[in-house]
Image 1 (cartoon, one colour):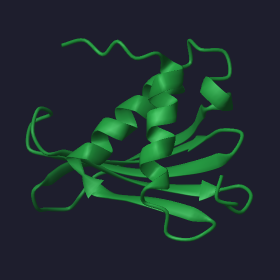
Image 2 (cartoon, rainbow, N blue to C red):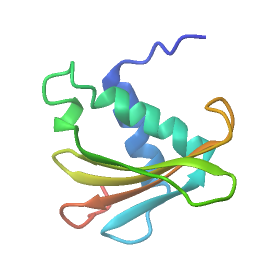
Image 3 (cartoon, one colour):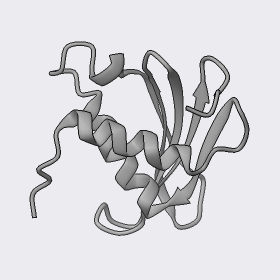
Length: 117
């Protein structure tokens, strides 16, 4: 089933989910999971280069491939996004083929302290 949400709705969903995982007034951490990978998909869509400045200025800043030495993880990436309010540091890992075992952990850093809004 195709995702019919707008990029703004995707961005708001990511923001809400990360707010549920707030650690303190400066950051939120979404645990390494398949759901985290789904949030990464939403972040990537909301910050797609075809959208001028992305939703809320969301922009891909950097990405780095990591080649694990051994184990179940076959590919890992470190990804850095930024928008007007937050910096997103993302670790994504793939275990086995690309249709199974896709997980991500997202750490969102607030540029200013969270005031509970």
